[in-house]
Length: 93
View 1 (cartoon, rainbow, N blue to C red):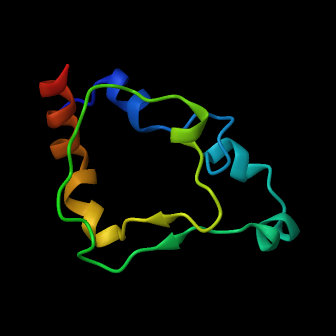
View 2: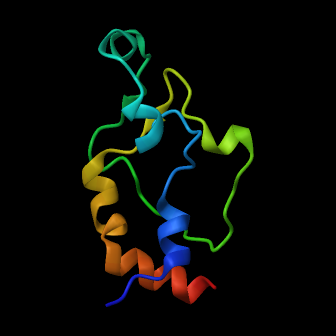
C-alpha cells in the first residue's frame, strides 16, 4: 500500500518540536541528561481511542510537558501500525 504524503505529514512532528528528529539531532549528551522525560502509563491503560482527521496544532496540544503521562507503547502499537492508521486517516478525510 502506498503511503499518502499527507499522512506522512500528519504523523511527523514539526522540526521545531522538542522530540523531532531535527531537534534531537542537534541535542548534546549533556542536554539529554538534563531533559525531564514524561512518565509512561502501564500497559492496558488505554481503554478506547477516537481518530479524527483534524490536525491540532495549538501549543498546548503539541508539547509534552514534564511529568505528563503518555500511553504505553503496547497500547498504541495496534493503532500506530502504518497501514491501519493510514487507512483510518483516509476514512476520516
